[in-house]
Length: 224
Image (cartoon, rainbow, N blue to C red; front, side, top):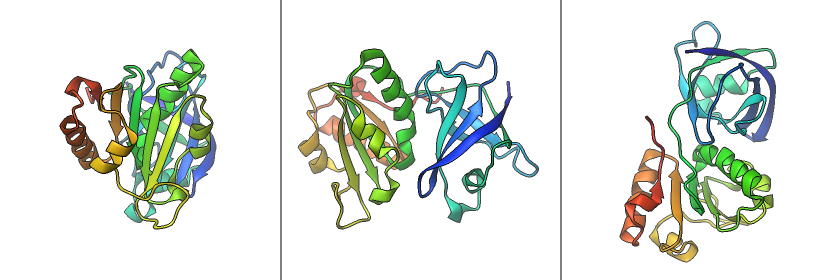
């Protein structure tokens, strides 16, 4: 089933990422970490569906996304960055998920942070603290770090930011490789959530297993 949404508000999060707020259709339910197929409701774009993750909490009366734009691609995300209040989109039923399976380390690359936004917000709302949780978030440069201030302010959440295309920064300046993980995580403790480009997820899953993390403690997106 498809639902039409009307944009209520759009605001920048970073230089190329926007927070979009839509009305919420009656009876539309989703869980933190779930995504939907999203299409612009205008000529020439209605069949160009893209998956985006809900970033607000399930009990909100809105539907919200944080979407990174890629102007060089001349595609959907470039058009999304140009949206104005009153514009409409269509979404499908929610699908997939990275489920919250307990305390652990959340490892994100770029726009792969989006499932963790709602998961961490929901856990904080329910528990009042994120003690025992760590966020490792990799980006190209510091200006690309989505919601940095919010994550740093979350009670109990330990944050480790790293950038790969900036030699001098106030954060780490390495890719997330085995030595990096050995410095920042305890492979014997908690769950390991990974979201990002497919190769990153594959490589880090393999690396964590080599470090002694059992497969059942590694949580990645379920697309069913």
